[in-house]
Length: 352
Image (cartoon, rainbow, N blue to C red; front, side, top):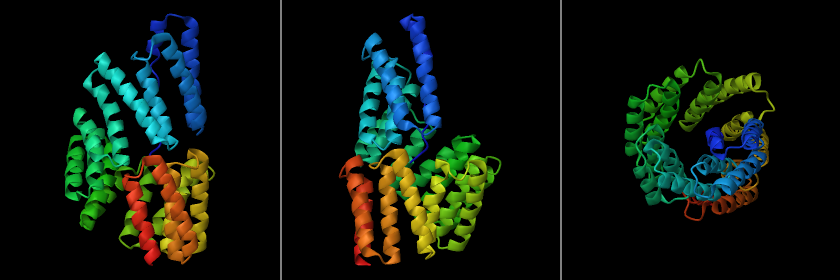
């Protein structure tokens, strides 16, 4: 799941309420939310955000534009906590407010893009396409359009969208991330050498950006593992681990992606004891941060199932896949591509 990015709530609306104590309350609420998010206290941030929403709704009414940014923040937190259906409901409310207020299309796009992405995640492809069609084209819209084509296995279509995105953007960070997406699309389309070029360029662009470089090393490691170069992938993971420990601290949640990716890699290398330890630690961190029933924990259970399959522990594999499938269905619904993928993987496991 992508990192939680909380918008700063527009305090300008406080002036419309005309009271000094209102301004003080809102400043305190925004400060509390920012601190809670930085500390990974997402449930606390959600509670504070909802308190702020009630405050505004009571004073301004349920259709006032001041509610929309708070609803969007609430949706972001709900997605971070693995509750996408609730997030979708809040975004629909926010979008209706913004459309009624006649806000500019660029602002509407951010709401439409989020709704399109959520519809995509639950397998409602036509609905996702509808939201994206209503949004003016920007980099985020194009990225989600590419994801839609990936899920539909239209690799050439996805690659075309991503290549167009890369031509239009001058932002190094944007080129780094779109390079990863283009790399995976190229690899899936059967062009590994083209994919290697995209991953290498992204790693080079990220060289002076420590946080992005860690992620770039891990993307490169995953790519090397997918094309069977496991030892090269392990070396890249080791380099990323050293950077994470030095920059963030070994006990920080941001090290979780390393644990997860390294666990998968070590399982493929046949280092089963190390892999199980890493994957279980990753699962524990995901449950602590997102809760026991979220997309993040479902994927952790699914990968643990795949690990047990490789290690020959079929009973443990079946149990892990069952946990993953139950959570995927609860979080995204029966028609989600995540459910279909999990069923496919678990069936392959039962045949092995």
